[in-house]
Every structure is written in C-alpha cells, then in structure tokens.
Image 1 (cartoon, one colour):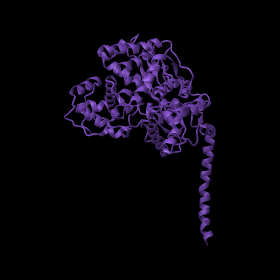
Image 2: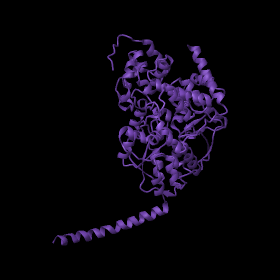
Image 3: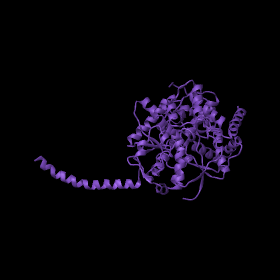
Image 4: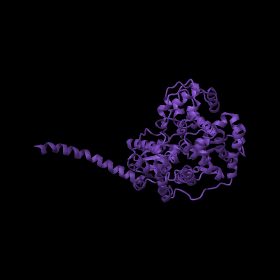
Length: 326
Length: 188
C-alpha cells in the first residue's frame, strides 16, 4: 500500500447512537496502518432533510466540510456513514459538473470550496487502496459457526455515476473483505433493499415492515448475523428489531454488526474496544465462539481426521448390516 | 385513487419548472414501469413513481404536489439506477418535494416537521443532537410517545449523550442557513 494520509469525517450519528461504528472503524484503520486526520470543527453534512429544501443549500452544508478538508491539505476523506458520503458526493458531483452551481454554493459559504476532495466509504478504501491481501494479513482469530449476510443498504453504491464504486445491483466489496478476514458470507439477495431509512420515528410501522423483509431474507440465505456499513441501517435492524417483532408477530434475534466490528474480532481486538456492548441484540455468542487461527487449524485438522476415519467405520457397519438381518 | 381528468387542470409551466429545476427531461419516460417495480415504498405510495412521472408529463401539478408519494420517497436511488432512459427519477421526486415545500402544500406534515426539526438542531449547534430532535419532534407533532419504547434500550447501552455537542463554527453554519433564506426571499 502507498503511504498516504486521509481525512476522516465521523459524522453526527457516530458521535451518538453509532459510537460503536466509530470505535471499531478507528481501531481497524489503525490495525491497517491507515493515517488519518479529522478536519477541525466539522459540522453536520445536512443528510436527507437538507436536500428536501434546496439542492444548492444542501450542497453548501456538505461543502463547508469539504472546504475544511482542503484547508488541512488533504484530498481524500473517509466517510463511514453512507448518508454523509452521499451528501459529499452529490455536492462534489454537482459542483464539478456545473460552474454556475458551484458559484451558487460558494456564495452561501464563508470560505469557498474548490472541489479538490474525493469522499470514499471505508469499504472503498479497504477494497481499493489497502487491498484484500493486507486486510487478510492482520487476521489472528477465526469465528467458527458464523455466517454473515453482507447488507450494503441503498445508497452506498447508487446511483453509479455519483457513487463510482462497486456494482449498483450486486456489490461485492463487503463480501470480499469479510471473506478475506476468513468470515463465511451468505448469498444475500436483499443486499441493497432499503431498510426504511430516516422514516423510523415518523413512519415506524412502515419501517418495521421494510426491515422485516431484510431480516427474513437474511435468515433465508442461511445467515445468523448481518453485517452493515450504515448507522441508519444498523439502527433500523438492531435497535428496532424488538419493534419489528411486535409489529409483525415475528421472533427475530439476529445480531447486527458493523462490518468493522467483525473485522476487528478477527484481528483479535477486544470486544470493549469494538463497542460490542453497545449492540442491542447481543453478539455475546459470536464473541464467545472466537478462537485463534492456530486453534481453528487444530480443530479443522482433528475434524478432518475424524472424517477420514469415518468411512472405515461406515463400511464395517454396512458389512455388518446383512448379518444383523439374518 | 381518484379518476383524473387529464384535459382539465393542466399546468404546462409546471412541466417546464420541474425540468429546469431538476435538470432532467421528463418527456423521455416511456412508462416501462421499471422504477415502480423496484421501488421499496410503492405499496405505501398513493401514486406509484411511474405514475408520478406520467402525471408530470401531463402537467398535473395539483395531484402531484398533494400526493403522499413525493414525501414517502426515501431517495434510495433504485429508480434512478434502473431507469433505461437515464432519467434521475429520485432527483425529480426530490425536486417535487422542494416545490411542494415552497408552495406550502405538504401532504405529509409529520415528515416535513421531522426534517425541519433536524435542520433546526443543525442550525443551533452545528451538529445533530439526536435526543433533542426526537424530543422536539414528539412535542411539536403531538406524538408524545413516538419511539419512547427505545429510550430504555439506548440508555442502558450508553448509546446517547445527554448534552448537545456545539461546534465553534456554529455561527458559520447558521450563516449558511441565513444566506440561503435571504436569497430565497429575494426570488419570491
């Protein structure tokens, strides 16, 4: 990997209800030797509400932060929250495409933004810049019995000409990253289906019904855990899982982990450092199942030995069977 | 859904207005229905997104601006991603919301209130204070107990902080709001 420095924008959710995403993200980036700095005094990106008011206004709220990144001399920003990332990418897209849009945005700002910052999800940084080999090199632990449904959510990869990363219909970056860390993933058809986004408070039942579909499809894919990369997806799937159960009469109990928490577990990081205690649906079983890679190797070897012995026994039994019948 | 008389209430300027503001050409839509087929919210919409596009082509301003669909759209970008005519459909839905807001015709008042409460928090502190937004929304909407079942869960897991984080440059963020509002007033 080329030595480079990134800016890091945690965003408001990661200071509050998604603090475990922030903790696990920083811990994993540190393990991967990624250098990053936070722009001083960053503000909210504007998220969904701002773009329902006006597009220039929304871009200005986002661009204030991008200008702060320019000011500290960096040109790539790691944005863990897809909603923040989309606000940044849409501002960047609009301002580079149209000079008049750029001017209108800058008229609202104290210090103009010169369009020199690319925002990337942590998935993109890990997949493209750090590389899967480096991701797998740090692995010290295995998570036997775990099968993860990688859930990307709606806007991490879409629309393609703005997101400019991975496939807009069948993304694979999170699958590959988890696989590189030795984690088993399921073939999950609802990777991109919207969880209900920011409507949780206002349209609770609607969101619970949408989330129900995502949880059901994950179970049907054979998964016993869902990996997410978005604070809003996590909130709707984890914090509201009890609501889903009471609204739809279901009895889900699926742990919803940030993909960085899963990677962190395979790197041997402590559950506390990864904010595992912040999860509403307990991930205790996953944590307890964790073993070192060496231990896992021994297990697999002894299992293989047992398997190798088994056919002999089988033939004996088969031979014995006719005798029993006689 | 009511029957719509397409020959009355046609507002041709509206088509122009939406096309200009969104930068999209609504007449490219040939009603394949791909957007509606993929829309996760279509069962909650009063007009499926492909019908919103058709209503737009027919200049049915009132029906569109009074619809619930434009507010229930979450900008998940499925329609935009799949449109064979490369229309940014989600951006058109966003533009329709913006116009409904501007003309003070909002069918889903609680959704707008939630967004406004979010923006108020941003203007005040520079960042979002989740607890404050929920409490303020519950008070203003009259849904006093919305999500109150989640309170004990987030508290026992230490997922919230009890005071807003104020940034130093919050006056600069507030200025963005003010400059935008001044500009919007001049255009009225």
